[in-house]
Length: 211
Image (tube, rainbow, N blue to C red; front, top):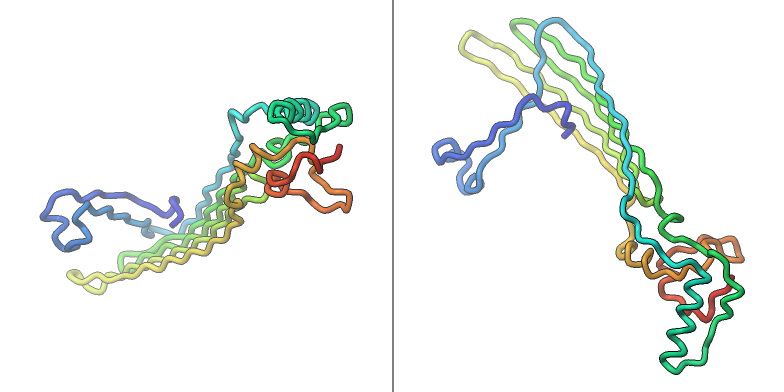
């Protein structure tokens, strides 16, 4: 549901008011009332724009520093597979390569009105939220239509139709660990011009990595 369609929120806590909901109301009941039409026809628009930024990104070793540390570890463990640290520059910063300042936009337009006998409210909403990871994105479309009809002085009826559609590109499982463990000496683009992901480099042997 689009938050712009909400008129008020009520929380029922006492047993008497929760009784009509049976067992499902044991932990409390939240009632959400959507906006209704009233008066002459009016058109309104609500919109917002914001952004998300990753904070406290860890400072990682560059490719040259990484190769020196790798050689020290190899020497300490009695290994013989050393890297030539002079062949490495700054390499790839996988956090900078994979993160972005993400934009969030939210739009909602509504038309409502009515008379003494009938009121209506129609609203359409759209949310576009980028994730701080470049491959992450979420989009949501909402529609809400309500109509109240006063049949007589004692009888009133109405209906409310709500529709929601959303789609998302979720982040891969373990991506944050991959960003942290991917060797900086691995290029983000392979010699064949194919994109290289942190998940590929995180499992690669440093001895196979080139400048």
